Image (cartoon, rainbow, N blue to C red):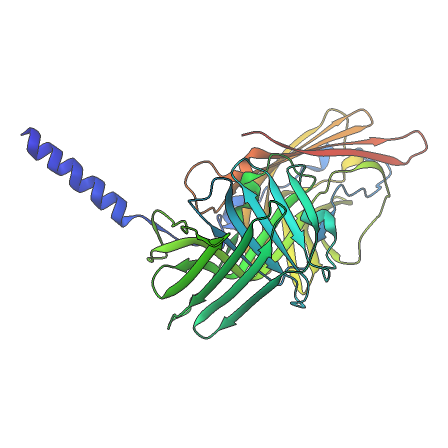
Length: 378
């Protein structure tokens, strides 16, 4: 009987392991179902107040053309090397991720990107500007990538990768870059399109550091039914950023030209149902249920709890979260808490560790001050 039991357990274990498969999903929630049709009561507002529009939101983006991350197993300090190109293919930078959490970025002289997006927190160091050789082509048989760079530890990294696939399939999904960050100044809403993982079959790869061959990491379970290296790429990454931390005055009726607002009229009070940030011919969308209220028209001691979703272009529900607004005297307390996202690794959704907190004060001269921050609690 014991042998039969062990056989059954072994069979189930093998079946479970071999049937595991990572699906690269473009979104995590059905936005309409997740948000529902919740509305604010008009009783939350003072009828005799000035209907001043104050938006706590800000947005950013940068210009990535292509990127690829390659992870290795047998180096004592380095775990991943990333190559990122600008859209002009002239500007490029290389990111070295270390086992201890430190990160170095090497920039070539043709980079025109805002450097604040190349240093998301204090663990990231911009190691300097230097020329390095690289190539990153997408052919009908797949990727062809080369990189030759010497880093400040006097280690010489050489990479040659060539795919020989007949059937190319690309996917779209949220980049889990924020899973490894301990602090941020803005939320990294980086979406990868025309992307995927590099399959082991029909791929030639040579990765050397100081002429020593490196062992390429492999994803422990199948990705879309294929055995893959731990090499992720995107031919069209869309790097958006949301709600950069601020400490200063904000203007009323301040609307950026590249942000479209969709409002709900709540008995004469203008509420934000949806925001669309337009950049690089793409759109990042933010939808709210109930609609985001006219915050300084709220009655004192009012608290509103709602949900929101974040989407890219025509794909909504990439991230689902909750928000809270509290009015106390002349202060507004705002919290955004991401809850759900698609991610390739099992476990707690990485976005759920993030929380945005803001306090907006009305000053005696009828101006407004905001103090905001992102916290990460794992």
